[in-house]
Amino acid sequence: MSDTRMSITTRDLKLWYGKFQALKGIDLDIKSGMITSLIGPSGCGKTTLLRCFNRINERYGNVTTTGEIKLLGKNIYDPDVSLIELRKAIGMVFQRPNPLPISIYENVVFGLLIHSENKPSRRDLDDAVEKALTEVGLWKDLKDRLNDRAIGLQLEQQQKLCIARLLPLKPQIILMDEPCSALDVEGTRAIEELMWSLAGRYTILIVTHNMAQARRASSECIFMLLGELIEHSRTEDLFLTPRESRTAEYIEGRYG
Amino acid sequence: MISSRSKLSLYGEKAIEWLIRICGVSAIIFVFAIFFFLFREGAPILREPGFNLWRFLTSTEWYPTSMSNVRYGTFALIAGTLSVTGVAMLIAVPFGLGAAVFVSEFCTGKLRESLKVIIELLAAIPSIVWGFIGLTVMNPLIQTVFHVQVGLNVLNAALLLALMSIPVMVSIGEDALKAVPDSYREGALALGATRWQVIYRILLPAAKNGLLAAVLLGVGRAVGETMAVLMATGHAVNVPHSIFDSVRTLTATIAAELGEASQGSPHYRVLFLIGILLFTLTFIVNLVADLVVRGINRK
Image (cartoon, rainbow over the protein chains, first blue to last red):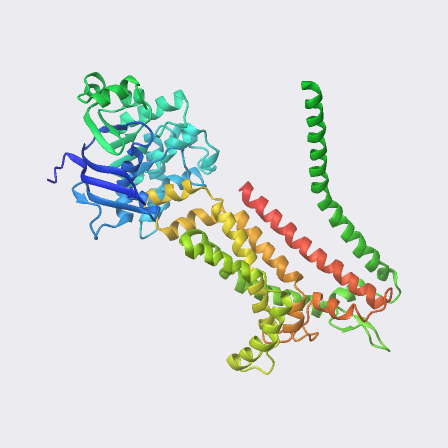
């Protein structure tokens, strides 16, 4: 059962917001080190599903979840699971870039500071900042203004920074919730390129509204409809030879 | 047809625009009018022979009705106001901001709504009723708990002022925290921050301007409060050496003595000068706060 090639597995995952059932029994296996995209019309539950994996949807009090979610072989609803450690291992990128209202430098080291018992040395922090910003391609542009407020950056840079701040924690999985929906064409391209450069080392799960993006920027693709998982296969298979008629109709743009 | 109608609505638009403009400008007019009025009544004393502004500010001797030797020293009154306000803020700021954080970040649903209503109810208690509480509840309580002779003192008044200024701090502080975008909380939580880390590292810095405004409104409330402190301080002209000393505040002095001072007399004018002093005090507090906020923002 605990297949090491699988980063995320769910069995019969159901979720209710109050009385409304948003997920109706999802069985899912997401492979390690790959980019998997989640597509489907608005309200199909793809963001809800994504937000299950770091248990951030528990912020709203009226959520009930049943079934099993295993991340890296560990059931995240086990009583001995620490939310803090879980969220350290699972990074999340949001729809609107949400850098914290502190400096660029502080954004990148925020994770390190909150997760270390003793304050890390200045040199360790400096190294982490340079490494993370280099990895997302921001170091050259920002290295002289690390103390500027992160909110003043362009949206594309903000979103890259939001990815960069995950990296010092060495997450195994990165969840992305429509990370490009606030960006223009150039910004979208930059983020997609960044995703490809991160793939392999990180398992990336991306929710997107944009079918073309799913096609460009993922190896596997999942199609969801009304809280159910309809189809999960390699991206080119799903778009070229969908098994389900509902998938085919969605891809053709009959609804959505 | 079309043109006549749009003309009418254009005039309507203009009229409303002017009305709103007047509303906006009226605040400035009122502030200046108040200042002018205070000055007209108080300033003539400055030209009076025998009146010394330096002594007015630094002398502790307040004998405005003495037959032989009238002395108008307000230092003890200033010290009274500052000590009571200061101690009140020491109590009110942690409680008020703590309550604001609790209501905004930890409470949900019914508890939150009922807490807000009750805290706002606290603001609705008339200050004279607070004075009663100071006289009849706090006074014996302080006497027995701290074994002091007099329960009407700095501590008593400061406790009342703290309770009176907490509601405004809570509601303004809560608004400030609620105004911090939820995406910051979510971003920090998703990185594995605890609730306390989110509050301490993200929310408080992000809401600092609003929280400072909350504290200042509380200070303003405390400096300006009259009736409750008149009843709870003991009303003794005295520079306090501990929180168990009785004092008298600037506001209470005006309230207690203005009725007896004949209009236009030096005593009357000095009381107005105290009014100007109070005005200046709150003005300085606001100005400093403004500069602090600007300083923080630039950084």
